[in-house]
Image 1 (cartoon, one colour):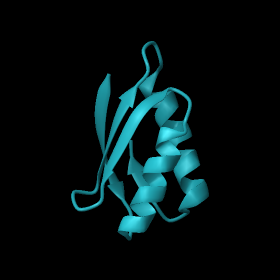
Image 2 (cartoon, one colour):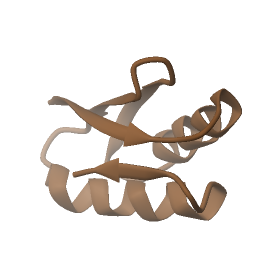
Image 3 (cartoon, one colour):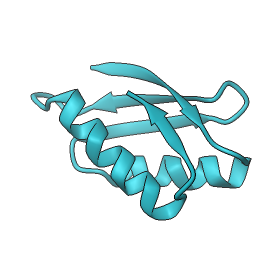
Length: 72
């Protein structure tokens, strides 16, 4: 399953950090952050709850970029 989320991030480097943090989250098959569009596209592994996984993604992103936001 793929979903798109609106994000708020200040710079392209920060967006790259968010993408890597999302990719390293359990339950995420792949993640792509588009800094210009302020969107994060996430592909989830089969059988996971996207809402629960996205909470983990947000927590992981906050660890590498504390002023970022993902609008769930």
